[in-house]
Amino acid sequence: MKKIYIITTYTGTVLSYLIRKISKTPYAHVSIALNEELNPMYSFGRLNPKTPIFAGFVEEKIDEGLYAIRKNTMCRVYSLDVTDLQYNNIYNNIMFVSENRKKYDYDVMALIYLTLNRPRQAEYKYVCSHFVADMLMKGEVGLFDEPSCSIRPDFFYDNENLTLEYEGLLSQYGKEAKNYVPYISKI
Image (tube, rainbow, N blue to C red; front, top):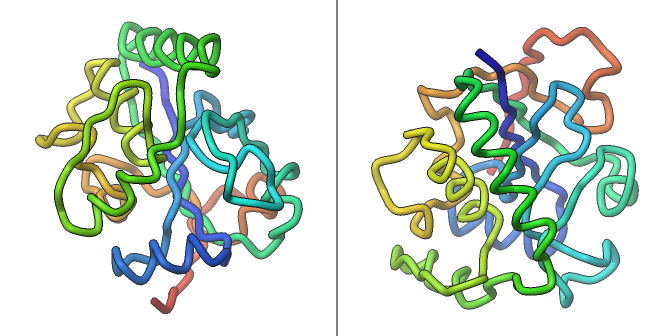
């Protein structure tokens, strides 16, 4: 058995604020990591930390990019036990997207569709939650009963199949005890 990590974050940017208000959950962005250090986290988001205009497949690091600018980013880090085969499938699918990243785009229209509770499937296009859910699905991890394109960031919040490992400032992850740190968020 191995562990993978699902990270939900709230940076406080205008876009994350809007997603948070619409979804009514404290966290607006979702990433997946294949190691406890969360190095790197894979997702779909800003290619340039200073502007949301250009977005796509990203390899995020706790102390770089948008997270270096937004040091007060709040997060939840969840773990999920997977088999070796599931882990390898997830890894291979993430690497496939990484190696073909120029084919993939951020699906801006999906944000609108998700607010209307209407899934949108577009070839070579993802939003963060769709990407993470799709990597899990392609890894044969049955976390959700719905198609990956209908998954929103709030589907990960308090998901009974995930183990909450940490909640607090992303910049402090790994710098303090790995125990759960209670945090009461306000929406």
